[in-house]
Amino acid sequence: MKIILKILILFLVAFYWEFFFSRPGWMGVLSPPLPFLIILFISLKWKEMTGAMSGFVLGGIYAGLFSEPPGLSCLSFTLLGYFAGKVAPFIMDTPRIVLFVFALCMILLYHFLCSILMSIFYEPMLQLRFLSAVVGGAVFAYFHPLLERLFMKSRR
Amino acid sequence: MRAQSPKRYKRYLLLVLVLLSLGALVSDVSQTLGRTPLGSALLRLFSPLIKSADFLESLITRGGAAFFRGEALQEKNDALREEIARMLLERAKMERELLDLEKAGSLLASQPLTADQSYGFLRSHIIGYSPNPWSKTVLIDKGWKHGVKREQTVLNESGIVGVVQDVSPEISRVHLVIDQRSALTIRVKETGELGVVYGTGKPDHLILNTEGLSRRLRRNDHAITAGLQKSLYPGNLLVGAVENIERDKFGRTTAIIRPAVDFNRLEVLFILQGSEIQKGKTIEDNP
Image 1 (spheres, chains in turn red, green):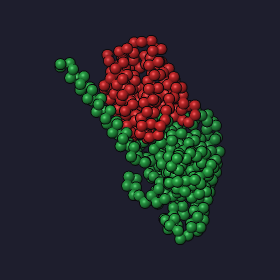
Image 2: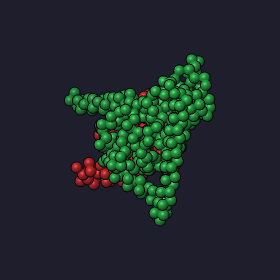
Image 3: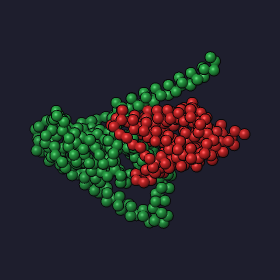
Image 4: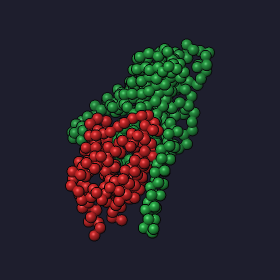
């Protein structure tokens, strides 16, 4: 129960971040997709199915809140959550630089997947936000050990 | 064999999730102004969070005392913007009347007029943006408590901005014309030709497809809303100007339109109250 409460608080913080930083200009360009980073954390910690399911649910909320095409975030969050859970054994307990590269690649993959889906169903587009991915990678690498500790305590 | 069944179960579950997502994506494609599932309910749920984030952001960007001192100046500025937008609407109305006089007796004149209706003006401020490039929407600080209804037209002092998509008591979401899922019927002011303008997701870029053959379209021609019956937008409001024209071997014309509105600097928006009525649709969901 405590774990679910903590996850909910994390999601609220992530959404607050999104509302606060999603502005046109530099602020928006640099702002990392925090809800997606939390899905990555969940996938690494509780493996692929939890990652996929939380990705699906959060993708639905994300779409409703930001008026994205409904399946877009659902599909990309589900697939990437599943993939992150699959590779979790190779990522856990690795130096921060590996976490940084992992999160960076996953964010770019998320942008790429969304661009592909938008190109198939709507107008052709390719939007890779490299700066946002770099900041996201740094945020993930810094906060991942802290979150690990936070969720470690609730196990006892 | 037993150890394999949870694996298979996981695969099935993943397959179901993927199929559900794809189904949602495909079902959305057919809608012009798609209703996001639970959109209004989620807006209602998150509105305190959105409003507090906006307040904190404006407090930080404008800085302490300047925030409170700047309020009066901001109010003056907003009032001026509103005046310009009202004049824009008035001009659109007069131009429409002139056109109708010129074409009296023709089929066009017999169509229900849209621009001669007087609308209520509701001023609103942007309090949130969509974070991703694949959705172009903004959140405004007015909801159904203030009289906002779904499908009301939104403009600013430069021209058409979008249409109200979801409404909650305190805040609403506006679907911008630059969104990839957006389409509006326009009339080229100089030639009178009809066409459909599509959003591309880019703030400075709209695509215009004209109906049938078009040889008369030129650069810097103005695209204005056609104001056809059941259109989401009233007639004669400026959408943008033709920037570039491409013609294929069959004579079909595709033009790039530079929007009149600067979508990177949106601040104050005006909601045309009453504009949803002339669209001839029942707004059942609005309280």
